[in-house]
Amino acid sequence: GAVDGLPANPRVDAKIGAEHADPAKLARALGMDMANGQKLGPLVLAATLKGDAKAANASVDLKAFGGTLAMTGDASGFAADALAYNVALKADYPSFNALMQGIAPTYRPAGRNIGPVHLAANLKGAPGAAELTGLQMQAGKAALGGGGRVAAGAPRPKRVASLTGGEIDLNPFLPADSTPASNGARSGAPRAAPPAPGPGGGPSKSPAGGHFSAEPFDL
Image 1 (cartoon, rainbow, N blue to C red):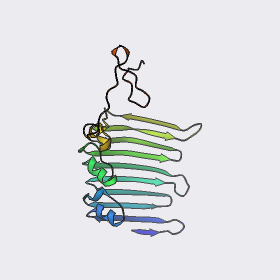
Image 2: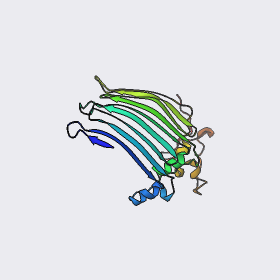
Image 3: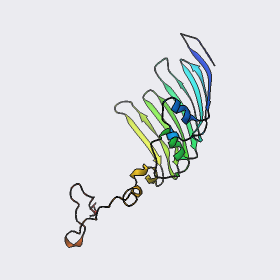
Image 4: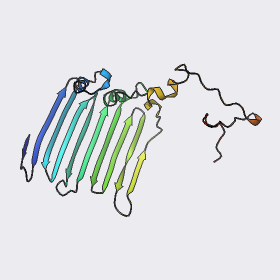
C-alpha cells in the first residue's frame, strides 16, 4: 500500500492480507486460550482501506472457524468531527457450535448440533442518529429479522425497532450445565418433593424461599 499527504492531509491506499493454518495454535503462542486446544481450521484475512482525513472506504473478508464474514463500508466527516458512515455486514457459518468454540471457548451450549448461522445487516449513521436495516439473523431454527433507528435529538432521544420472528426456543442455547436435562435425574441429584395438598385437596402455597405456587394467577 501507500501513504502520502502527511501531515496536512494524509491519504492511504492499502491492501492487507494474512493467513494461518491453525488460529488456535497462533492464539496460544500469543498467550490466549482459544477453543480449549481444538483445531479450528485455517484463517484467511483480506482487507482494503482507501481514503483521506475527509472520507474513506474499507472492506474486510475473513474466513475462519469454518465460515465467512464480509464487511464493506464508507465513512466521512473525520476532520469536521461529524462522522457519517454506511456499513454492510454479512456472515455465514455452517455450525453455531464450531463458531462458539472459536470465539467463546468456555461456553458450551446444551444443543450439540444447533445448526448454521447467518447474519446480514446494514448500519447507517450520522451525528445524533443511527439506523439499522435489512437485519437477518438465524442460528439453527431460531430466526429474527427487521430493523430500527435511534435519534438523539431534542426534546428526548427516540428509539424505534421493528422485529419479526417465529417461535424461538432458547433451550439449545443455554449453557449445558444449566438446562433441566443436565440437572436432577441426569446428574443424580435428588429432586424436591412436590408441595403438599392444601385445604380442600388443592395445591398449597409455597413457603418463602420454596418453589413457585401452583395456584393460577387471576388476570
